[in-house]
Amino acid sequence: MLLSHYYLPDDDRNILDAAMVDWIEALDGFSAAQIDAACQRHIRDGRFRPSPARIRELCEQRAAKTGTGDKMALSRSELALLEDTILPTARRWLTIPGLAEHGRKTLEYWGEA
Image (cartoon, rainbow, N blue to C red; front, side, top):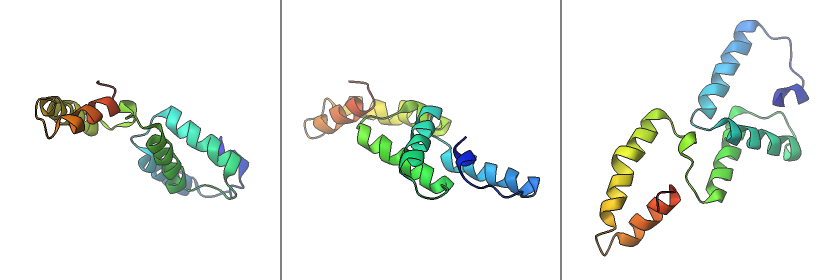
């Protein structure tokens, strides 16, 4: 619906399909809720037709402001890395005096504290 607010030329169907693939690839890793929030913000604040990069930027800005990780926004490989490597490492760090604070903050960021 976002692009319905802007002029869309009668492009060839192949061009529209290619553009849709660009949007999908640019926003891969973000949840539908994150993308919707970014689109709503652009409708309120944007002056021109958005690019996939602009909506991605808005998604990233919102994620940075929340101060918490969104596991739903991760790709499968990113989630596997988080669950198999990052979180177990952060838990081990809790027992190491020089790393305990970093481990606690990492776990807290991902809602694991």
